[in-house]
Structure formats: C-alpha cells, structure tokens
Length: 357
Image (cartoon, rainbow, N blue to C red; front, side, top):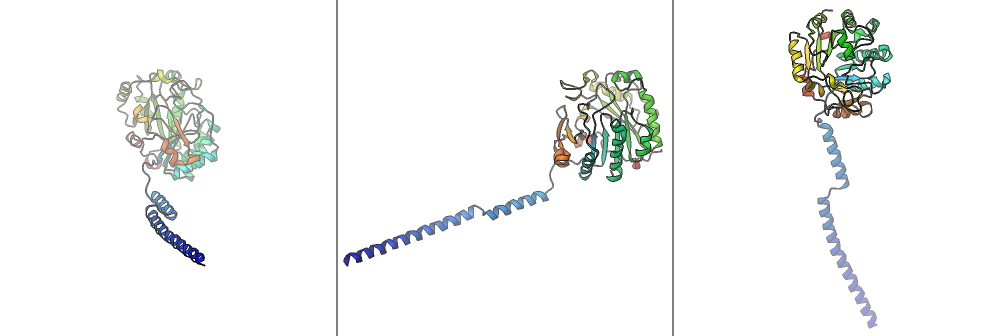
C-alpha cells in the first residue's frame, strides 16, 4: 500500500515537471515567433510589396525611351547599280511579306513615328515598284503619317507609278553623285549606257507634275571631290540637297566579309569641307559628315531590326515584330541630339512646304 502511494506521488511530480517545461517552452516559442513576425514579412506582405513595386514602376515614366520620330526602312538590299561606296549592300535577297511589313509600320506609328523613309538597295526594284507603292499608300492613307519619303537611284521609276501612288508620297530623293556621265560610270552609279543624268531631270519633271517634293542626295568621294555642281543643282532646285561624306561600315563596304571595298573612295574631313565651301551659295545644301551621319539615323533592315552603327559596323537588334518597338529600339545606338543637330527634323510634309507646283 505504501509502495502504491509513493508511485502515485512520483507520477504526480513528473506530470508537474512536464507541465512546467511545456509552459516555459511555450512562452519562449511565442516570443521567438513574435520576433520573427516583426523581422520577416508574411507571405501576404511579400506579395503586396511586390505588387506595389510593380504598380509604382508602371506609373513611373521609363527613362531614356527613344521615340522613333523618323525611321529609315531598308526593306530590300537588292540593287541594279554597283556603287563602290555603298554601305547597305545586297547581302540577302529577303523581303518581308507585305502584311508583315504593314504590321511593323503600324507598330512604329503607335510608338510615335511621324516620318517613314523607304530605301534599299533599290526600292523600286521589288515587284516593279508595286510593293513599295502599296506601303507608301498604307502609310499615308491608313496610318495618316505626316511624311512619307523614298530614296532611289531613279533607274526603275516610271510615270505610271506617279499616277497611281504619287498623291501619297511627300518626298522623292534621287541619288546623284556627279553630273558627268563618265564619273557616274566609274563610281558604279549606272546601268549599261543609260544616262543617269537625263533620267534625273525627267524624274524632276514628274515630281513637279504629280506634286511630289524633289530631293537630291550626293555622296562626296575621291571621284567627284573636285566637281562644281552649282549650276545643275540650281537648275534642279531640290527642296533639300543632302551632301554626305563617304562613310566606311565594316561588313558592308569595308572589312573581310564586305561586298564592296570603299577605302579608295574615302576623303578627308578637309576635302569634304572644301567641297562644302565651293557650294556654299546653294541654300538647300544640307551637309552630313561622318560624325553627324553615323549614329543619327534610325535604320531598320529587311527583317525590321534596328541597326547600331556605333562600332563602325551594323549590329542588329531583335526584330520589332518579335519584341516590339520599345525593346528593339534600345539597341539602335540612336543619338537623338545629333539627329536634331544635323537638321533631321524639318518641314517634311508636302502639305506644309508651300511649294509652287
């Protein structure tokens, strides 16, 4: 009986000890949990914090977002001329299907594009100019762009193209580097024995007849550096005469993988300045040295990729059709300050030019 009483006492003592330990451990555990709650946010808190950060980022304007105000779309690389200094050569024959091209043009308009310039290669070569004409019409009538322009060598242009699409075109720029036929032949700006100069003046008349502003582009190089073009430029009376210093681009007209060897066309900065001085009386002259030209253009290639020329070559972004304009344009290398400095923004809608047609 006495043994049973002792066992009961021991059992009660053990239960008391266990209860005390539980109480002490529970108290410690509560304090620890409270401290952890204070130091580490709950899962719900983390989620709310992430949401708040995301919303704040969406509300805050993103820095350094470039607006593609003026875009040069080189939709084809094929050309019927062989200009020795060409820096956008026929490395591929690819051309986007028309609906894909229109999709990209619409994305550019939604991103802020006001002016589109179609170039090549020779843009009138593909589908005898109808592909180009449809894009011109789409940009002016459907997208309502203020300015639609083309750069061409002029060799493939027919009057019937003006009849069909001329009303939708603001500016047509024709490339002409010399008013001497032999010089043009030496440069490679020729097709057989056809007169590039005679064709140039004929296109000038069509621009007058079909209310398209006429522009002239010339690349100054070792073959034409001493030429005086004043008389012919005055007679043609373009709205702008863009005068470029011959530019080397690795992989295009210079380097191992290039299709041209333009080193023999390159002139010095002083030679370029001398040419400009000789033509200083021409008010429509717009000079573009290598410094001004290299990073001040937004260039899209045939895949609708922006081309970055900062390293002296053309490094492509991803296509705007795949990643959108905002992401792709970050890799364009575009210098907006230089774009404005070289006069990239001007009166580029023929409706605002007040020209006497």
